[in-house]
Image (cartoon, rainbow, N blue to C red; front, side, top):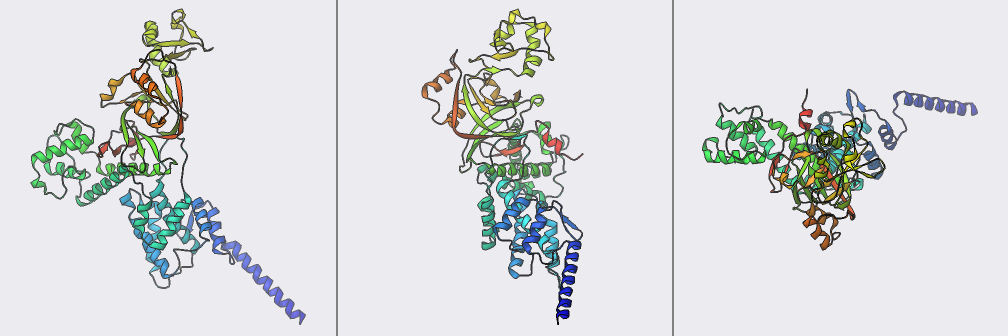
Length: 540
Protein backbone atom coordinates (compact mmCIF):
# COMPACT_ATOMS: atom_id res chain seq x y z
CA UNK A 1 0.00 0.00 0.00
CA UNK A 2 2.81 2.37 0.95
CA UNK A 3 4.54 1.66 -2.38
CA UNK A 4 1.40 2.68 -4.24
CA UNK A 5 1.18 5.94 -2.24
CA UNK A 6 4.85 6.62 -2.91
CA UNK A 7 4.29 6.08 -6.61
CA UNK A 8 1.41 8.55 -6.62
CA UNK A 9 3.47 11.14 -4.77
CA UNK A 10 6.32 10.71 -7.20
CA UNK A 11 3.88 11.06 -10.09
CA UNK A 12 2.48 14.30 -8.70
CA UNK A 13 5.98 15.69 -8.13
CA UNK A 14 6.97 14.82 -11.71
CA UNK A 15 3.82 16.48 -13.03
CA UNK A 16 4.48 19.63 -11.00
CA UNK A 17 8.08 19.70 -12.20
CA UNK A 18 6.83 19.39 -15.78
CA UNK A 19 4.34 22.25 -15.31
CA UNK A 20 6.98 24.49 -13.72
CA UNK A 21 9.42 23.71 -16.55
CA UNK A 22 6.83 24.59 -19.18
CA UNK A 23 6.00 27.71 -17.17
CA UNK A 24 9.63 28.85 -17.25
CA UNK A 25 9.90 28.16 -20.96
CA UNK A 26 6.82 30.06 -22.10
CA UNK A 27 6.83 32.55 -19.23
CA UNK A 28 3.07 32.21 -18.78
CA UNK A 29 2.53 31.00 -15.17
CA UNK A 30 0.10 28.11 -14.98
CA UNK A 31 -1.09 29.05 -11.51
CA UNK A 32 -0.59 32.79 -11.85
CA UNK A 33 -3.55 35.11 -11.20
CA UNK A 34 -4.57 37.99 -13.45
CA UNK A 35 -2.89 40.25 -10.88
CA UNK A 36 0.42 38.38 -11.20
CA UNK A 37 0.38 38.48 -14.98
CA UNK A 38 -0.60 42.14 -15.23
CA UNK A 39 2.00 43.11 -12.62
CA UNK A 40 4.66 41.18 -14.55
CA UNK A 41 3.75 42.93 -17.80
CA UNK A 42 3.70 46.37 -16.19
CA UNK A 43 7.16 45.89 -14.70
CA UNK A 44 8.60 44.94 -18.07
CA UNK A 45 10.03 47.82 -20.07
CA UNK A 46 9.45 46.00 -23.33
CA UNK A 47 6.54 46.64 -25.69
CA UNK A 48 3.61 44.28 -25.34
CA UNK A 49 3.82 41.64 -28.05
CA UNK A 50 0.71 39.87 -29.33
CA UNK A 51 1.64 37.60 -32.24
CA UNK A 52 2.88 39.96 -34.98
CA UNK A 53 1.72 43.12 -33.17
CA UNK A 54 3.86 45.18 -30.82
CA UNK A 55 2.27 47.92 -28.71
CA UNK A 56 4.00 50.51 -26.50
CA UNK A 57 2.31 51.13 -23.14
CA UNK A 58 2.16 54.87 -22.43
CA UNK A 59 1.06 55.08 -18.79
CA UNK A 60 2.66 52.24 -16.82
CA UNK A 61 2.71 54.09 -13.47
CA UNK A 62 -0.85 55.27 -13.95
CA UNK A 63 -1.95 51.75 -14.91
CA UNK A 64 -0.40 50.34 -11.73
CA UNK A 65 -2.44 52.77 -9.63
CA UNK A 66 -5.51 51.92 -11.70
CA UNK A 67 -5.30 48.16 -11.21
CA UNK A 68 -4.58 48.50 -7.50
CA UNK A 69 -7.62 50.76 -7.18
CA UNK A 70 -9.92 48.39 -9.11
CA UNK A 71 -8.48 45.19 -7.64
CA UNK A 72 -7.18 43.94 -11.01
CA UNK A 73 -10.65 43.46 -12.48
CA UNK A 74 -10.80 42.75 -16.22
CA UNK A 75 -12.99 45.16 -18.16
CA UNK A 76 -12.50 44.94 -21.89
CA UNK A 77 -11.37 41.66 -23.34
CA UNK A 78 -13.50 38.70 -22.37
CA UNK A 79 -16.70 37.41 -23.97
CA UNK A 80 -19.16 38.98 -21.50
CA UNK A 81 -21.86 41.09 -23.16
CA UNK A 82 -21.07 44.02 -20.82
CA UNK A 83 -17.51 44.02 -22.09
CA UNK A 84 -18.78 44.21 -25.66
CA UNK A 85 -20.60 47.39 -24.71
CA UNK A 86 -17.51 48.80 -23.06
CA UNK A 87 -15.41 48.12 -26.14
CA UNK A 88 -17.99 49.72 -28.43
CA UNK A 89 -18.13 52.75 -26.15
CA UNK A 90 -14.32 53.06 -26.10
CA UNK A 91 -14.12 52.87 -29.90
CA UNK A 92 -16.78 55.58 -30.23
CA UNK A 93 -15.00 57.78 -27.68
CA UNK A 94 -11.61 57.44 -29.36
CA UNK A 95 -13.15 58.26 -32.75
CA UNK A 96 -13.95 61.67 -31.20
CA UNK A 97 -10.22 62.41 -30.64
CA UNK A 98 -9.84 64.38 -33.89
CA UNK A 99 -12.53 66.86 -32.87
CA UNK A 100 -10.53 67.60 -29.71
CA UNK A 101 -7.29 68.12 -31.60
CA UNK A 102 -5.88 64.75 -30.45
CA UNK A 103 -4.47 61.93 -32.56
CA UNK A 104 -6.32 58.58 -32.44
CA UNK A 105 -3.10 56.76 -33.26
CA UNK A 106 -1.81 57.69 -29.78
CA UNK A 107 -4.45 55.40 -28.28
CA UNK A 108 -3.78 52.03 -29.96
CA UNK A 109 -6.37 52.79 -32.65
CA UNK A 110 -5.26 50.16 -35.17
CA UNK A 111 -4.80 47.42 -32.60
CA UNK A 112 -8.20 48.00 -30.99
CA UNK A 113 -9.93 48.05 -34.38
CA UNK A 114 -8.20 44.77 -35.30
CA UNK A 115 -9.21 43.13 -32.01
CA UNK A 116 -12.80 44.31 -32.44
CA UNK A 117 -12.96 42.88 -35.93
CA UNK A 118 -11.48 39.50 -34.92
CA UNK A 119 -13.71 39.25 -31.84
CA UNK A 120 -16.76 38.90 -34.09
CA UNK A 121 -15.36 35.78 -35.74
CA UNK A 122 -16.66 32.37 -34.55
CA UNK A 123 -14.46 30.55 -32.04
CA UNK A 124 -12.42 33.69 -31.25
CA UNK A 125 -10.22 32.88 -28.24
CA UNK A 126 -10.66 35.69 -25.68
CA UNK A 127 -8.36 33.94 -23.23
CA UNK A 128 -5.34 34.06 -25.54
CA UNK A 129 -3.18 37.05 -24.58
CA UNK A 130 -5.99 38.17 -22.27
CA UNK A 131 -3.78 40.23 -19.94
CA UNK A 132 -1.94 41.88 -22.82
CA UNK A 133 -5.20 42.88 -24.48
CA UNK A 134 -6.63 44.13 -21.20
CA UNK A 135 -3.59 46.38 -20.64
CA UNK A 136 -3.69 47.79 -24.17
CA UNK A 137 -7.38 48.71 -23.93
CA UNK A 138 -7.01 50.23 -20.46
CA UNK A 139 -3.91 52.16 -21.52
CA UNK A 140 -5.87 53.60 -24.44
CA UNK A 141 -8.77 54.70 -22.24
CA UNK A 142 -6.71 56.18 -19.40
CA UNK A 143 -4.19 57.93 -21.66
CA UNK A 144 -7.00 59.47 -23.69
CA UNK A 145 -8.82 60.74 -20.58
CA UNK A 146 -5.52 62.06 -19.19
CA UNK A 147 -4.74 63.94 -22.42
CA UNK A 148 -8.23 65.46 -22.57
CA UNK A 149 -7.90 66.73 -19.00
CA UNK A 150 -4.20 67.67 -18.81
CA UNK A 151 -2.83 67.68 -22.35
CA UNK A 152 0.31 66.06 -23.69
CA UNK A 153 3.76 67.32 -22.73
CA UNK A 154 4.65 70.68 -24.30
CA UNK A 155 7.96 71.99 -25.59
CA UNK A 156 9.41 74.22 -22.86
CA UNK A 157 13.01 74.73 -21.83
CA UNK A 158 12.31 74.81 -18.09
CA UNK A 159 9.29 73.97 -15.97
CA UNK A 160 9.29 75.81 -12.66
CA UNK A 161 5.63 75.42 -11.68
CA UNK A 162 4.17 72.65 -9.57
CA UNK A 163 1.64 70.26 -11.06
CA UNK A 164 -1.75 69.33 -9.69
CA UNK A 165 -2.36 66.17 -11.72
CA UNK A 166 -5.07 64.31 -9.83
CA UNK A 167 -4.84 60.59 -10.58
CA UNK A 168 -7.85 59.93 -8.36
CA UNK A 169 -9.89 62.31 -10.50
CA UNK A 170 -9.11 60.34 -13.67
CA UNK A 171 -9.86 57.04 -11.94
CA UNK A 172 -13.18 58.44 -10.73
CA UNK A 173 -13.98 59.70 -14.22
CA UNK A 174 -13.11 56.28 -15.61
CA UNK A 175 -15.44 54.56 -13.14
CA UNK A 176 -18.28 56.98 -13.98
CA UNK A 177 -17.67 56.36 -17.67
CA UNK A 178 -18.24 52.62 -17.26
CA UNK A 179 -21.22 53.17 -14.97
CA UNK A 180 -23.03 55.76 -17.05
CA UNK A 181 -21.86 54.76 -20.53
CA UNK A 182 -22.10 58.45 -21.50
CA UNK A 183 -18.65 59.20 -22.91
CA UNK A 184 -19.65 62.64 -24.24
CA UNK A 185 -20.71 63.81 -20.79
CA UNK A 186 -17.54 62.29 -19.34
CA UNK A 187 -15.26 64.21 -21.72
CA UNK A 188 -17.18 67.43 -21.15
CA UNK A 189 -16.62 67.08 -17.41
CA UNK A 190 -12.82 67.11 -17.76
CA UNK A 191 -12.20 69.45 -20.70
CA UNK A 192 -10.93 73.00 -19.98
CA UNK A 193 -13.60 75.69 -19.75
CA UNK A 194 -11.57 78.76 -20.72
CA UNK A 195 -13.00 80.85 -23.54
CA UNK A 196 -9.76 80.49 -25.47
CA UNK A 197 -9.90 76.68 -25.45
CA UNK A 198 -13.59 76.47 -26.35
CA UNK A 199 -13.26 78.97 -29.21
CA UNK A 200 -10.16 77.26 -30.61
CA UNK A 201 -11.98 73.91 -30.56
CA UNK A 202 -14.93 75.39 -32.45
CA UNK A 203 -12.59 76.89 -35.05
CA UNK A 204 -10.69 73.61 -35.44
CA UNK A 205 -13.85 71.63 -36.16
CA UNK A 206 -15.28 74.22 -38.53
CA UNK A 207 -12.03 74.47 -40.48
CA UNK A 208 -11.50 70.69 -40.61
CA UNK A 209 -15.08 70.11 -41.72
CA UNK A 210 -14.88 72.55 -44.64
CA UNK A 211 -11.52 71.19 -45.76
CA UNK A 212 -13.08 67.73 -46.03
CA UNK A 213 -15.87 69.15 -48.20
CA UNK A 214 -13.66 70.93 -50.75
CA UNK A 215 -11.14 68.58 -52.35
CA UNK A 216 -7.74 70.02 -53.27
CA UNK A 217 -8.24 73.30 -51.42
CA UNK A 218 -5.16 72.74 -49.26
CA UNK A 219 -2.86 72.80 -52.28
CA UNK A 220 -4.82 75.32 -54.40
CA UNK A 221 -2.75 78.45 -55.00
CA UNK A 222 -3.70 82.09 -55.41
CA UNK A 223 -1.38 84.18 -57.60
CA UNK A 224 -1.15 87.90 -58.23
CA UNK A 225 -1.50 87.34 -61.96
CA UNK A 226 -4.59 85.12 -61.78
CA UNK A 227 -6.41 85.62 -58.48
CA UNK A 228 -8.96 82.86 -59.04
CA UNK A 229 -12.10 84.23 -57.39
CA UNK A 230 -13.53 80.83 -56.41
CA UNK A 231 -10.29 79.77 -54.74
CA UNK A 232 -10.07 83.01 -52.78
CA UNK A 233 -13.68 82.66 -51.62
CA UNK A 234 -13.19 79.02 -50.60
CA UNK A 235 -10.09 79.89 -48.61
CA UNK A 236 -11.92 82.72 -46.87
CA UNK A 237 -14.71 80.24 -46.06
CA UNK A 238 -12.15 77.93 -44.39
CA UNK A 239 -11.28 80.75 -42.01
CA UNK A 240 -14.97 81.48 -41.32
CA UNK A 241 -14.84 84.88 -43.03
CA UNK A 242 -17.56 84.08 -45.58
CA UNK A 243 -20.59 81.90 -44.84
CA UNK A 244 -19.66 78.45 -46.13
CA UNK A 245 -23.27 77.73 -47.15
CA UNK A 246 -23.35 80.67 -49.56
CA UNK A 247 -22.96 79.80 -53.24
CA UNK A 248 -19.67 81.25 -54.55
CA UNK A 249 -21.42 82.93 -57.48
CA UNK A 250 -23.70 84.75 -55.03
CA UNK A 251 -20.83 86.29 -53.06
CA UNK A 252 -20.52 90.00 -53.91
CA UNK A 253 -17.23 91.80 -54.47
CA UNK A 254 -17.90 93.84 -51.33
CA UNK A 255 -18.28 90.61 -49.34
CA UNK A 256 -14.99 89.32 -50.76
CA UNK A 257 -13.23 92.59 -49.86
CA UNK A 258 -14.69 92.45 -46.34
CA UNK A 259 -13.53 88.82 -46.04
CA UNK A 260 -10.02 89.76 -47.21
CA UNK A 261 -9.89 92.53 -44.58
CA UNK A 262 -10.96 90.06 -41.92
CA UNK A 263 -8.29 87.65 -43.10
CA UNK A 264 -5.63 90.37 -43.00
CA UNK A 265 -6.65 91.24 -39.44
CA UNK A 266 -6.47 87.55 -38.49
CA UNK A 267 -2.90 87.43 -39.84
CA UNK A 268 -1.86 90.83 -38.33
CA UNK A 269 -1.48 92.39 -41.80
CA UNK A 270 -2.51 95.88 -42.96
CA UNK A 271 -6.28 95.71 -43.49
CA UNK A 272 -6.48 97.15 -47.01
CA UNK A 273 -8.85 94.58 -48.47
CA UNK A 274 -6.44 94.18 -51.40
CA UNK A 275 -4.76 90.95 -52.45
CA UNK A 276 -1.17 92.18 -52.04
CA UNK A 277 1.85 89.87 -51.93
CA UNK A 278 1.79 89.38 -48.14
CA UNK A 279 -1.92 88.55 -48.17
CA UNK A 280 -1.53 86.09 -51.05
CA UNK A 281 1.40 84.41 -49.25
CA UNK A 282 -0.77 83.88 -46.16
CA UNK A 283 -3.70 82.62 -48.27
CA UNK A 284 -1.33 80.06 -49.81
CA UNK A 285 -0.03 78.90 -46.44
CA UNK A 286 -0.81 75.20 -45.96
CA UNK A 287 -4.33 74.83 -44.56
CA UNK A 288 -3.51 71.43 -43.10
CA UNK A 289 -0.67 73.10 -41.24
CA UNK A 290 -3.13 75.72 -39.94
CA UNK A 291 -5.20 72.83 -38.54
CA UNK A 292 -2.08 71.48 -36.81
CA UNK A 293 -1.41 74.92 -35.31
CA UNK A 294 -4.89 74.91 -33.81
CA UNK A 295 -4.35 71.41 -32.41
CA UNK A 296 -1.07 72.46 -30.79
CA UNK A 297 -2.66 75.52 -29.18
CA UNK A 298 -5.55 73.41 -27.89
CA UNK A 299 -3.01 71.12 -26.28
CA UNK A 300 -1.23 74.09 -24.68
CA UNK A 301 -4.50 75.22 -23.12
CA UNK A 302 -5.25 71.70 -21.90
CA UNK A 303 -1.74 71.55 -20.41
CA UNK A 304 -2.53 74.62 -18.26
CA UNK A 305 -5.03 72.40 -16.41
CA UNK A 306 -2.03 70.86 -14.61
CA UNK A 307 -1.46 74.03 -12.56
CA UNK A 308 -2.32 74.03 -8.86
CA UNK A 309 -3.42 77.68 -9.10
CA UNK A 310 -6.72 78.76 -10.69
CA UNK A 311 -5.27 81.88 -12.29
CA UNK A 312 -2.01 82.50 -14.07
CA UNK A 313 -0.10 84.82 -16.39
CA UNK A 314 0.35 83.60 -19.95
CA UNK A 315 2.82 85.30 -22.30
CA UNK A 316 2.45 84.15 -25.91
CA UNK A 317 5.75 84.92 -27.64
CA UNK A 318 4.58 85.06 -31.31
CA UNK A 319 1.58 87.21 -30.29
CA UNK A 320 3.80 89.52 -28.17
CA UNK A 321 0.90 89.59 -25.73
CA UNK A 322 0.33 88.90 -22.03
CA UNK A 323 -2.94 87.85 -20.45
CA UNK A 324 -4.01 86.98 -16.93
CA UNK A 325 -6.22 83.93 -17.21
CA UNK A 326 -8.77 82.76 -14.68
CA UNK A 327 -9.64 79.13 -15.26
CA UNK A 328 -13.23 79.67 -14.09
CA UNK A 329 -13.85 83.00 -15.81
CA UNK A 330 -14.57 84.16 -19.35
CA UNK A 331 -12.67 87.45 -18.95
CA UNK A 332 -8.98 88.19 -18.56
CA UNK A 333 -6.53 91.05 -18.18
CA UNK A 334 -4.49 91.57 -21.32
CA UNK A 335 -1.68 93.82 -22.55
CA UNK A 336 0.94 94.11 -25.26
CA UNK A 337 4.49 93.06 -24.49
CA UNK A 338 7.89 93.32 -26.14
CA UNK A 339 9.80 90.04 -26.34
CA UNK A 340 13.20 88.91 -27.57
CA UNK A 341 14.44 89.55 -31.08
CA UNK A 342 15.57 86.68 -33.29
CA UNK A 343 19.20 86.88 -32.11
CA UNK A 344 18.25 87.11 -28.41
CA UNK A 345 15.11 85.00 -28.17
CA UNK A 346 12.80 84.82 -25.19
CA UNK A 347 12.80 81.15 -24.12
CA UNK A 348 9.60 79.18 -23.55
CA UNK A 349 9.42 78.23 -19.86
CA UNK A 350 7.21 78.28 -16.77
CA UNK A 351 7.94 79.93 -13.46
CA UNK A 352 6.58 81.83 -10.47
CA UNK A 353 6.89 85.54 -9.73
CA UNK A 354 9.02 85.64 -6.60
CA UNK A 355 8.82 89.36 -5.88
CA UNK A 356 8.04 92.77 -7.37
CA UNK A 357 10.77 95.41 -7.22
CA UNK A 358 10.06 99.11 -7.49
CA UNK A 359 12.69 101.48 -8.90
CA UNK A 360 15.06 98.64 -9.81
CA UNK A 361 18.68 98.95 -10.78
CA UNK A 362 19.55 97.31 -14.08
CA UNK A 363 22.71 95.23 -14.03
CA UNK A 364 23.66 95.10 -17.69
CA UNK A 365 24.26 91.52 -18.92
CA UNK A 366 27.88 90.93 -19.96
CA UNK A 367 26.98 90.25 -23.60
CA UNK A 368 25.15 93.57 -23.90
CA UNK A 369 27.87 95.44 -22.00
CA UNK A 370 30.72 94.16 -24.20
CA UNK A 371 29.07 93.71 -27.59
CA UNK A 372 26.74 96.71 -27.69
CA UNK A 373 27.89 99.27 -25.13
CA UNK A 374 31.68 98.93 -25.05
CA UNK A 375 32.19 100.11 -28.68
CA UNK A 376 30.08 103.20 -27.92
CA UNK A 377 31.98 103.88 -24.69
CA UNK A 378 35.29 103.66 -26.55
CA UNK A 379 34.07 106.32 -28.98
CA UNK A 380 32.57 108.60 -26.32
CA UNK A 381 32.90 107.97 -22.60
CA UNK A 382 30.03 110.45 -22.14
CA UNK A 383 27.74 107.62 -23.35
CA UNK A 384 27.80 106.25 -19.81
CA UNK A 385 26.60 109.46 -18.18
CA UNK A 386 23.98 110.09 -20.86
CA UNK A 387 22.45 106.67 -20.16
CA UNK A 388 22.77 106.89 -16.36
CA UNK A 389 25.27 104.01 -16.33
CA UNK A 390 27.69 103.36 -13.48
CA UNK A 391 30.91 101.34 -13.70
CA UNK A 392 31.38 98.83 -10.85
CA UNK A 393 34.66 96.99 -10.22
CA UNK A 394 35.03 93.39 -9.02
CA UNK A 395 34.96 94.61 -5.38
CA UNK A 396 31.53 96.18 -5.87
CA UNK A 397 32.82 99.76 -5.78
CA UNK A 398 31.85 102.45 -8.27
CA UNK A 399 34.72 103.62 -10.49
CA UNK A 400 35.12 106.97 -12.26
CA UNK A 401 34.88 106.00 -15.97
CA UNK A 402 37.21 108.85 -17.03
CA UNK A 403 40.07 107.15 -15.14
CA UNK A 404 39.76 103.92 -17.17
CA UNK A 405 41.72 103.16 -20.34
CA UNK A 406 38.79 101.66 -22.28
CA UNK A 407 40.98 100.66 -25.23
CA UNK A 408 42.43 97.81 -23.12
CA UNK A 409 39.10 95.96 -22.89
CA UNK A 410 37.16 93.76 -25.25
CA UNK A 411 34.55 90.99 -25.41
CA UNK A 412 37.18 88.54 -24.17
CA UNK A 413 38.33 90.63 -21.22
CA UNK A 414 36.06 93.06 -19.36
CA UNK A 415 36.61 93.19 -15.56
CA UNK A 416 33.76 95.63 -14.83
CA UNK A 417 30.00 95.54 -14.38
CA UNK A 418 27.80 98.23 -15.89
CA UNK A 419 24.77 99.20 -13.83
CA UNK A 420 21.99 101.59 -14.68
CA UNK A 421 20.73 103.59 -11.71
CA UNK A 422 17.09 103.89 -10.76
CA UNK A 423 15.01 106.59 -12.37
CA UNK A 424 12.68 107.41 -15.23
CA UNK A 425 15.36 106.66 -17.83
CA UNK A 426 16.16 103.20 -16.45
CA UNK A 427 15.68 100.51 -19.10
CA UNK A 428 13.64 98.49 -16.58
CA UNK A 429 11.36 101.45 -15.90
CA UNK A 430 10.00 101.60 -12.37
CA UNK A 431 8.83 97.99 -11.92
CA UNK A 432 10.49 94.61 -12.23
CA UNK A 433 8.89 91.18 -11.66
CA UNK A 434 11.50 88.60 -10.67
CA UNK A 435 11.00 85.00 -11.84
CA UNK A 436 12.51 81.76 -10.54
CA UNK A 437 14.26 80.14 -13.51
CA UNK A 438 17.75 79.30 -14.78
CA UNK A 439 17.45 82.20 -17.24
CA UNK A 440 18.17 85.87 -16.59
CA UNK A 441 14.66 86.61 -17.84
CA UNK A 442 12.01 88.64 -16.03
CA UNK A 443 9.00 90.86 -16.68
CA UNK A 444 9.55 94.61 -16.39
CA UNK A 445 8.47 98.13 -17.18
CA UNK A 446 10.34 100.11 -19.85
CA UNK A 447 11.29 103.72 -20.55
CA UNK A 448 10.59 103.22 -24.29
CA UNK A 449 6.77 103.31 -24.19
CA UNK A 450 6.44 104.26 -27.85
CA UNK A 451 7.54 100.81 -29.01
CA UNK A 452 4.21 99.27 -27.95
CA UNK A 453 2.48 101.00 -30.86
CA UNK A 454 4.59 99.01 -33.33
CA UNK A 455 3.45 95.74 -34.94
CA UNK A 456 6.99 94.39 -34.64
CA UNK A 457 7.49 93.97 -30.92
CA UNK A 458 10.34 91.46 -31.10
CA UNK A 459 12.99 93.89 -29.92
CA UNK A 460 14.30 92.94 -26.48
CA UNK A 461 17.35 91.01 -25.33
CA UNK A 462 15.08 88.25 -24.04
CA UNK A 463 13.22 89.84 -21.15
CA UNK A 464 9.52 90.69 -21.42
CA UNK A 465 8.69 94.41 -21.38
CA UNK A 466 5.16 95.27 -20.20
CA UNK A 467 2.76 97.80 -21.67
CA UNK A 468 0.82 98.09 -18.37
CA UNK A 469 3.23 97.12 -15.58
CA UNK A 470 1.20 98.93 -12.90
CA UNK A 471 -1.93 96.94 -13.77
CA UNK A 472 0.02 93.71 -13.37
CA UNK A 473 1.64 94.82 -10.10
CA UNK A 474 -1.67 95.81 -8.54
CA UNK A 475 -3.21 92.50 -9.66
CA UNK A 476 -0.54 90.13 -8.36
CA UNK A 477 0.15 92.08 -5.18
CA UNK A 478 -3.54 92.77 -4.47
CA UNK A 479 -3.28 95.10 -1.44
CA UNK A 480 0.53 95.06 -1.40
CA UNK A 481 1.02 98.49 -2.99
CA UNK A 482 -0.29 101.41 -0.95
CA UNK A 483 -1.76 104.54 -2.53
CA UNK A 484 1.35 106.67 -2.01
CA UNK A 485 3.62 104.07 -3.63
CA UNK A 486 1.33 103.81 -6.66
CA UNK A 487 1.28 107.60 -6.94
CA UNK A 488 5.09 107.77 -6.82
CA UNK A 489 5.45 105.07 -9.47
CA UNK A 490 2.94 106.69 -11.80
CA UNK A 491 4.81 109.99 -11.52
CA UNK A 492 8.16 108.21 -11.94
CA UNK A 493 9.88 110.35 -9.32
CA UNK A 494 13.64 110.74 -9.47
CA UNK A 495 16.17 109.47 -6.92
CA UNK A 496 13.88 106.89 -5.35
CA UNK A 497 15.19 103.96 -3.36
CA UNK A 498 14.67 100.42 -4.55
CA UNK A 499 11.97 98.48 -2.65
CA UNK A 500 10.85 94.86 -2.74
CA UNK A 501 7.31 93.52 -2.37
CA UNK A 502 6.67 89.83 -1.69
CA UNK A 503 3.57 88.16 -3.06
CA UNK A 504 1.04 86.80 -0.57
CA UNK A 505 0.56 83.76 -2.80
CA UNK A 506 2.49 82.24 -5.69
CA UNK A 507 1.54 83.51 -9.13
CA UNK A 508 2.48 81.25 -12.07
CA UNK A 509 3.93 82.68 -15.27
CA UNK A 510 3.77 80.59 -18.46
CA UNK A 511 5.85 81.87 -21.36
CA UNK A 512 4.74 79.76 -24.33
CA UNK A 513 5.14 79.69 -28.11
CA UNK A 514 1.67 79.52 -29.70
CA UNK A 515 1.27 80.45 -33.37
CA UNK A 516 -2.52 80.44 -33.10
CA UNK A 517 -4.73 81.72 -30.30
CA UNK A 518 -7.79 83.79 -29.48
CA UNK A 519 -7.15 87.53 -29.12
CA UNK A 520 -8.52 89.95 -26.53
CA UNK A 521 -11.64 90.50 -28.68
CA UNK A 522 -12.38 86.78 -28.81
CA UNK A 523 -11.29 86.37 -32.44
CA UNK A 524 -9.04 83.70 -33.96
CA UNK A 525 -5.53 84.89 -34.79
CA UNK A 526 -2.54 83.27 -36.48
CA UNK A 527 0.90 84.68 -35.71
CA UNK A 528 4.18 84.71 -37.60
CA UNK A 529 6.66 81.99 -36.72
CA UNK A 530 9.13 84.61 -35.49
CA UNK A 531 11.74 82.13 -34.20
CA UNK A 532 11.34 79.50 -36.94
CA UNK A 533 9.90 76.91 -34.55
CA UNK A 534 7.20 75.86 -37.03
CA UNK A 535 9.73 75.71 -39.84
CA UNK A 536 11.83 73.28 -37.83
CA UNK A 537 8.84 70.91 -37.59
CA UNK A 538 8.58 70.45 -41.36
CA UNK A 539 9.86 67.09 -42.65
CA UNK A 540 13.20 67.22 -44.44
